[in-house]
Image (cartoon, rainbow, N blue to C red; front, side, top):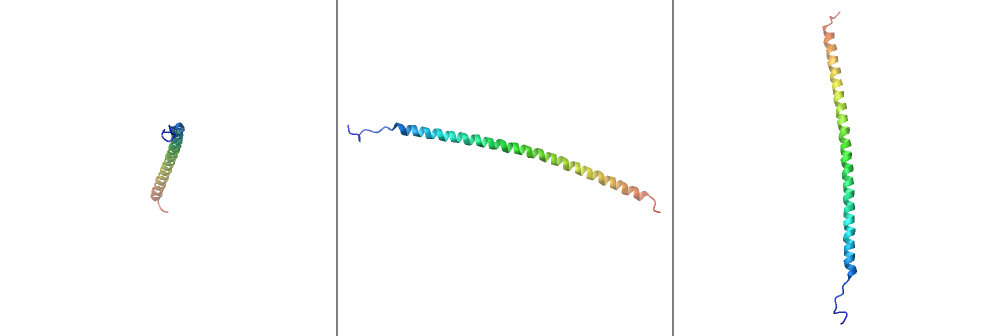
Length: 87
């Protein structure tokens, strides 16, 4: 037989293909783990921001209530002063 007539079976090329596929799968898995971590971090940051927002909203509500009480107090004082006879 002449070497040119016989097909050459390259076992290494199949192994290299599988190795490349495994490397790619490993890379994709690592990417997925990274993205999952990023997603968890973003979720945690979002939760923290929502908690801060709720605190700020409560503080703002308290301030508005205090302002309202002061206004009512001032209005009551004004009405009282109007009732006083002028000298």
